[in-house]
Length: 42
Image (cartoon, rainbow, N blue to C red):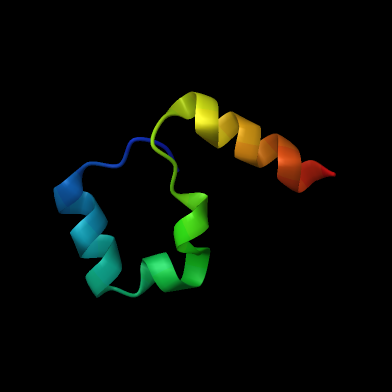
């Protein structure tokens, strides 16, 4: 996920969604997210 605002992030955190998906899958912007996605394909 890219560029998640603070309020939705906290809701996802409370619901343990961040733990399920992994905090490293939350990226600062779309460019970082696309680079991360490309690295997972390999």
